[in-house]
Image (cartoon, rainbow, N blue to C red; front, side):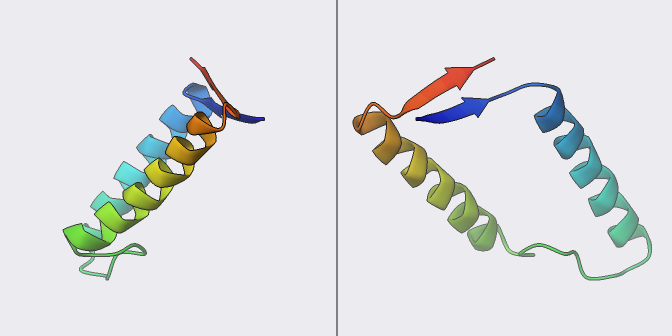
Length: 64
């Protein structure tokens, strides 16, 4: 069973990512992630596909 949660850890991760993006941009360094929107969508699409198949198999639960 796959458990997908949205809570404090995910919020902290989003904040750290935001701060990292701001700092890297402020010092004109390349970001440690795909710097094109297509790359970001590929990562998100991979995760959504994983969750969709797990949901179809009734192997996923969502916790908020």
